[in-house]
Amino acid sequence: MLLAHLADLHLGYRAYHRLAPGGINARERDVALAFRRVLERVIELKPELVLVAGDLFHTIRPSNATIADAFRQFSRLAAALPGTPIVVIAGNHDSPRAVETGSILRLLAEIPGVVAVDDHARSIVLEALGAAVLCLPHNALVADQAIALDPDPAATTNILMLHGTIGGDVARQKLRYVTEYGGVQVEASEIRPERWDYVALGHYHIATELAPNMWYPGSVERTSTNIWDEPGDKGFLTYDTASHRARFHAVETREVVDLPRFSAAGLTPSEIDGRIRELTDAIPGGVAGRMVRLVITDLPRELFRELDHRRIRELKAEALHFHLDARRPEVRRLVGYGAGQRRHTLDEEVREFIRRVWTPSSPEIQVERLVELADTYMGDAGDAGTGDALVDAGDSALPPEASPAPEDPIPPDGED
Image (cartoon, one colour):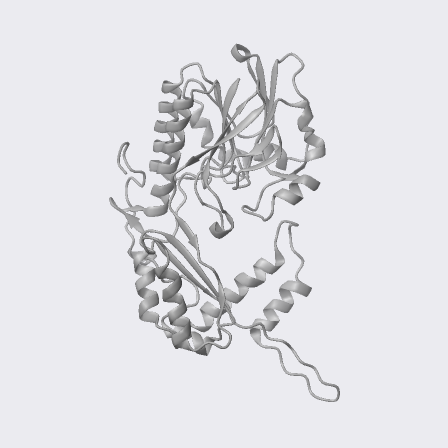
């Protein structure tokens, strides 16, 4: 049996306040178009089963236009693949905490051929395929109840689908960093993939093999809190249960460029400006329409103020998103015997609190990454008066309050 495995679609995702033709958010349009490209490829491949492993929507309450477009696209998929079951589970992004709130995924279950599982663990028996899919949506994993992860002895093909973070030695080696918070951890020793024909995972945004028959397909576009940590192509997987072979299918997405970082130590403002120009000019086709980041370390505030901010503003206007990540030098505290200790700066106090006082609420939280973010935000606050913050709070084409709220943020079929 050939199955298609999708996950982390995040329909309705928005970022950067940049507008595409028609007044829609550019990144929301990117995600919608990537989803359509995925479905077009799935239809070409004609799988016998389609699995969507959570986070279909980016929020619990997506816009009406996002819901309508998702309904249209799944209806198109079901019509193009008659007789092919489409099984969807809810992820942490589209799972309401209150049961009475209800899940928008239930609307998709009104489409013939689509099964949506949003609350409790449930086994979906597909008699025509001789298969059973044990579905573990996010809320089933959050619930304080034991779930028997056992294949169906009456089924010829047994599939496990869940949305969460896999634990264990192999997962710790391969899941190099957190792309999404909020997922429930499930130990690989509880799953025991060798008992299943396939284990379809969702939540981690990078296509990753944890076992020959256990995969994260990754997200269809870059929608995590840190897109720079998502290298490689985006797309979906197919898996053949007869040959036991998985194949990744890449789809076109907006280009992301993470430029080589450099240190400003010992450089003059003009030398730093020259280095910025050299790196950005080396991008084939320039920064236009791309998402670009440049990290500059050891850059004090007073030196940052002397840079060519007119050129930086031009880069921000030309690119979809240009992130100049300027990081100040690390302050080293020197303490001498018999002498009064220097008073901590506010930046040092924040770092000390995060590293030594504060207790992370989740083992997934990366303390040093949080320190980096704190440094960035502190720099932003300190330089707000200069008109050129260290981070990209001001790089939008329109300020949030001036951005129109389009009636239909999803482009019509066929429009690119």
